[in-house]
Image (cartoon, rainbow, N blue to C red; front, top):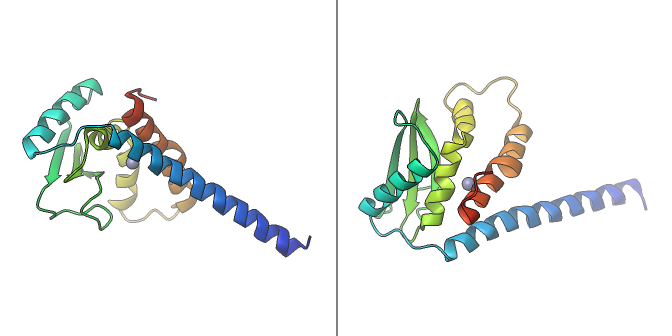
Length: 160
Ligand SMILES: [Zn+2]
């Protein structure tokens, strides 16, 4: 086999592996969500947030603004039907839960916050992009560390 052919093949295998990996992350998260009760209101979201905060031992000094996206005003990654979370200021975080979002989705997002995953994103986006920013390192951190941990927590309630 020529060098180019082997290289193309290696890229193909890597791509297929990557798609399979990301697909199973999304799949496990969807699976957890299917078996989880839907969140129906802002009030319910806030009550659940309180319970999750307690079980993950998030300090009183941390403010979490959880928004039930009932009027589709907010979007996560451009979609009004997905959940997401981010650090909005020092000691301040935001979670968006869409209509038909579940307890499992909330658990997933709050785990990202409790375990400091969103802090890393904040460090990178709230300031001028550091000169030594390593996009590969960022995605590797997200895909192979932060995301699987949040999925494990929403699936099992275990704190990896
Ligand atoms: Zn996530």
